[in-house]
Length: 282
Image 1 (tube, rainbow, N blue to C red):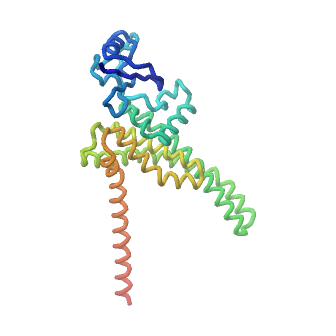
Image 2: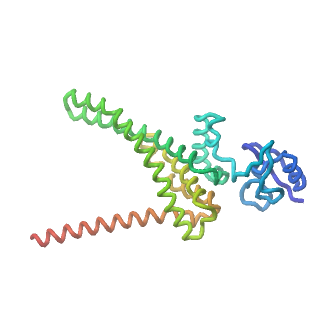
Image 3: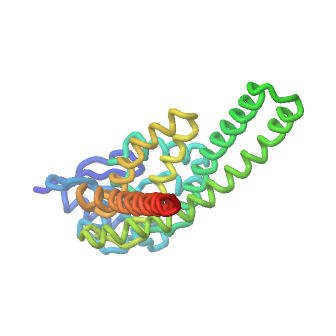
């Protein structure tokens, strides 16, 4: 007899037989959005995918279409609180990315994921702007400049911080679509796009957003983001698209390698042109 384990809102409901689950779906005891696992599965999946009931499961007085997971809590921020939702989503993405992104909703639009990415980028930009402003002021003072330039540097900090915050948020939102589109294209080329662009875009939004929060820790956060960021991005893509690590890694890394290669060729060509011009002039 097959035993199915069921979880809802990160709490175990117990283990049940297929007949019990089928009866529970009909009575409303279980929902299609509940996560379930049985022997032989690599990860937890929505109960609606087990083929034990209708693909549209009744919940209360309304019919709802089941979503593909229960993470992130950010998408319930209005009910659980914005700070708690932001914190738990960020901690989950950074410290348990496999578990978190394997339970990520792959449908539901881009609004909330993009808002999360923008908020995280703004917070990271706030710290980076403050750090830049303070370093500028300290450098000016250490250089023996007059009091007026130091005072001007101090007054300029709010402008620097504000500009960094706004530009970081806007750039991140644009980058999610551009970078997400490039990654999805490469994933399609490698045969790893098992779901639509929405799944990729949402994964990129939450992974990039979480990585940007590392910039809240000056200097050290940049180093951690440089090494840990690509790992989180690969895991997020792999889990969202239900593909393997090789395809996810290629989809994330090849665009960077091609971009760096193109820049290298441009620099090499420019240097060759300069050397040729100097030789001609000589």
